[in-house]
Length: 257
Image (cartoon, rainbow, N blue to C red):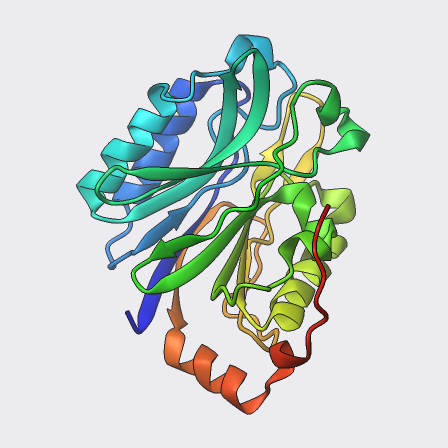
């Protein structure tokens, strides 16, 4: 597929209220009147960034995943975002990538946010995910992963790098700069979807959801208010840029342990 239309859903989440958040996202998705191939939701989109996993965690095939499957099927589009999951007596900040046929793949956040003591509640995943969808290779990651370029290194020639996040206002400059840097260094489209609003812990979130092309050019205006935006990614432009600037051919070879 030559082009991929991705929708960024930047919203003010209801704290620990799964029912209200799913209703909100469904309304936002229903309001989109252009063709969309992939809907991208923030980190912990059904609850907000909560450490109250014992209360909020769902089973691996729980109601929020089933909601994602229904929406993907009804809209004939993929949908991705992370939620709180309990599996084998462990809690995970788990991203689901759900395809239009309701099949899915998962990624567990690798870098748990120690500043918020996320590591004391959630187990870290140890495998990166690469999704094949409509002729695009997509690597979805979660929030704090953004600070660690080695984990995102484009050794498999993915076309789109995604970060879903709850990234707070005091460090929003880092979000802006690192998203752009990940696009440039990996010669890939890079999309980051963040939330807005104030959570129960008085952490403020100012959005700045954005998409950058493989040379770091922004493809949308960053905003602090809630929005739903559709951005078109051009595969031919990406491949032409890589052919002209063969920077990935000079990348260092290494393995992660």
